[in-house]
Length: 226
Image (cartoon, rainbow, N blue to C red):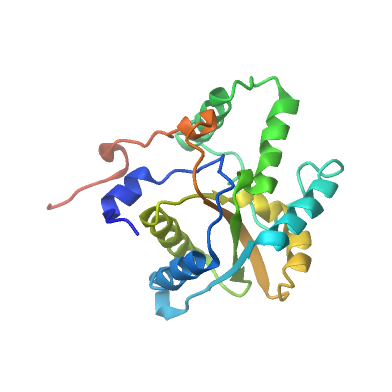
């Protein structure tokens, strides 16, 4: 394990979209999840549920989705809206620029719909990662507990960086909630939120050069008395 600081982990975390096939041990995954459980949650509800998948099980899932993709390129439809409808500014422009910058790294033009769909489908190969996590939440939980799950996920991603690994949180996996529910034998009271690909970053992949912009402090923070 490295001596990476929290600040370094935050600064170097990115959504990795091309992984090496270098294995990640089950022990490492267990250590990350066991440490991430210290994430805060209101009332100590700890509303997160995780399914960790690798090896032959991961390959079986890849094959299952690959067989369904030609007929359902956008999956089965998520149980929750990934983005609010009719986004206003500055959020609409931020989302648009993120997409344009992403596809620019791999030379896929806006009018190349087939190319964009092919890249989107890479989500369901976990971008080549050797392991994946699926994050679920109990259906009785509310907005506060979804925030708790987000803090748990951030903890996972930073702990991965501490170990020299990279991740990609993938809301796209919520589009296959029925198939995932069956594959993972998930109880019906749980809802899939997202997947997280985890592994070693392919440093040679152009798509991994993307670094999305962040608004300056003055744009999102208001200070009173400090």
